[in-house]
Length: 94
Image (tube, rainbow, N blue to C red):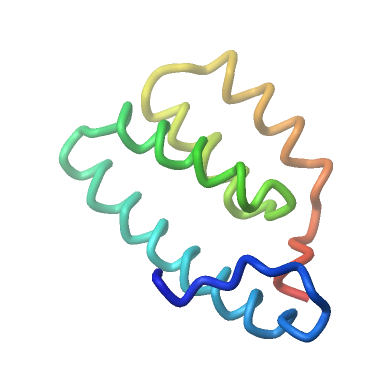
């Protein structure tokens, strides 16, 4: 993840998209490992922090909602799913 591009300049758009794809793959693998070992609280915290950088990515919103469901936080997951639906398609994955 050290190659992540944080610059919002238009010339870095493709690099940002590639960084976002890489980060999404890492989070998907983290989800599999954390759920398998019952680490739902850590997973929820990690995905919530990820939303600070990828708030427009519907995939991260969905994964965060699913992690909340796995942690038994059903009411919060419903709210997250409603907010996540504001971003039907990721702007980074166009």
